[in-house]
Length: 412
Image (cartoon, rainbow, N blue to C red; front, side, top):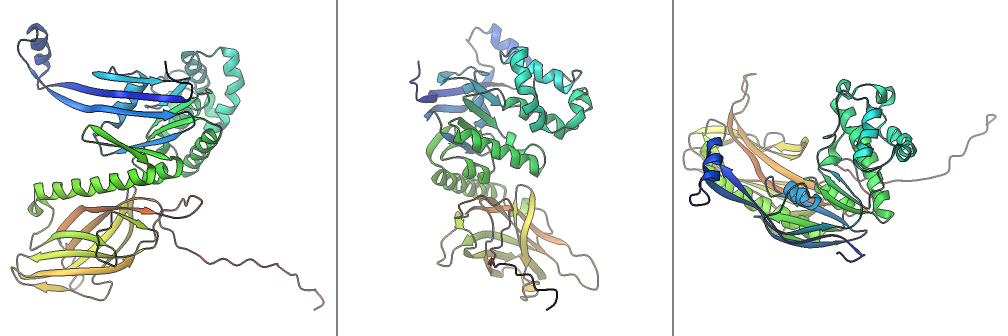
């Protein structure tokens, strides 16, 4: 029995999966009576422990495959742990797979009542909630049309609206804040803020550090089957540093020769540095920075060097040696160059990736060729020290003046 002030308790939680190389190996394993092993084991989570108090907002971050979704499913009781325990206090609404229980032949209205029945609500109780759900989903007359006729956006809007209107004490959300358009995402975030201010408990999984930082006070970073728990800013820094290490190991393992391009020149390293020359894993908004490329020539050639900053949705910023006036870079086999861009980082809270590339110059309108394409060359996070959230990803600070508008007399 959990104490009254605890919403979620996880104690020594572990989950190990059996991985079979062939479907028939499952049958062999069953009849072997444990005398022979026809599978290998994969430990998704190992000895995870943490406690979430009522009213806390906690964000879970980690790389793909780190066990985030597995952890939520264990807490919700969808999966059975190999070892340990996960307990929840009070009514829980879990947004793990939006609309998983919807019947495509039912109308939106019928599905709302059906989902309410699954959660233990009577028809009269759902009558009181229906107008709020329909208003939040904002799909108009389609609420009385079969769900199979919905667009994917309409489908997830209704599913999200149903999930958050069941008077839950705790909301558990797995990457569900990316549903709908920007206006609907803003509406969802505003609802979660109100839910938190009203004393609700939130447990959120997201790859977007911008969302985690905006909503959460505490962070949990899953790495190598284990976890690190702490203030969200510290955990975000831990996550970014682990990403940098992972990228470095990936590049070392694959080698530059596996990247696209002719190979006449290669980028050996990409570093984002502060003015003192320290590697930047986390930077302040608009902080001066230096982007350093180490380039090695494998043939006599002329190239242009470029870099681009991207978030999860695509390109944000970028430039090249040609655009900045350095022109073409020429070299012979064995020559190494250090190219350094001095820049600033006018970016909102979040995690960003660096892409660097080398191309041949455009001569007489002929198309250029890719020489080297270094994707995910480095990553970093931005911390925007502002009391309110900035929704745009690229943020340019403005000066503001306010003065009374005095109307001039018509006879003047």
